[in-house]
Image (cartoon, rainbow, N blue to C red; front, side, top):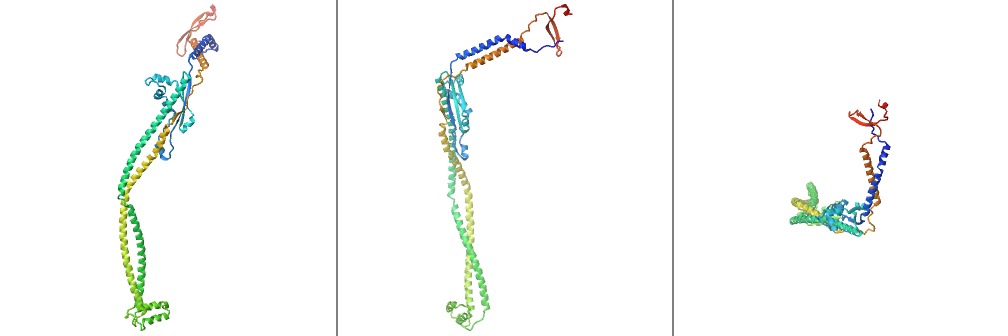
Length: 455
């Protein structure tokens, strides 16, 4: 059984291509000629471009004030959407607002391209507005109008953002001013009863007095201890010398001077003191040392009594000062507690007010800068030559496409066309497809017509 033949030889491909070569060439030449004629018949168009620069008016500030200043810079996508919006196109080209078809046709003649993209990282955007028109002057005029309208729209958009921020900050500042006034009034009301300075002064004075009193008490304690010891010694001395003398007090002084027990310089004052004693004391039989000891003992007793009385008074004054100091400290603590709330409220209100008040000058500066944030830096000039039409390139491309399509059609027609009948005798042959079992009939050309070939 014969296998079906599905392979196509290169010679068959060549014969198919040669048979349709005339049609392929004619199709390519015809389409190319039509494309050339179409391009030649079209009127010349001119393209002009104007350049707009947009700078972000962002005042520099330190700290957290930067968070209160709005970011008003425009990106490429935002500016492109704004420039191609219906409001900008109507303002630039004076088209009807209810004519979307006219806006669509107009947008086809416009082109927007961002240039100098390296400066965009610094907040500066530069864009080229290109317009295609039938005349050079019209193209330049329309490009300038579009660029100017786009710059004005960008400026207005940024102005709206800054104005909204200024209005919000002004309202916030007014609210914070009211809060600050209320806190100031509360603090003023408390300040009328605020005696903390006077209380601190009184406490400091009491502390100084107490320090002086404690020093005097310590001194008195030392004097009392010393006088008590001297008093005990003198009392013991007087008790030990209980005898009498037969000589007078003056003779006893002379004897003590001769014995070097008393300095000669002290003898005169001692005799003068003896002369001042009552007559009964200076009579004979009195012991001079005992008499002096008793006199000193009486003096020490009086001094000790004075020191003890003074110490008692100072101790009572100290106790009273301690109680007064405790009362003053309690009043001061109460005032400090009362002052904590209005003082904290006043401090917080003043901080909040100062923070918003500090950003207002920056917002005012930003308002002045935003008026010139977007501007036309390069105006469009009428082009000297029309826009290139690339006639040769378009014609060759059209011819090539037509030739390829014609070639494809030639091969498709050859593929679906009936096979050419053989010139010699044929016979009907039947084959069975071993896979699907389908019967296939085809004609085979006989090699010979002799009877022997049929046997």
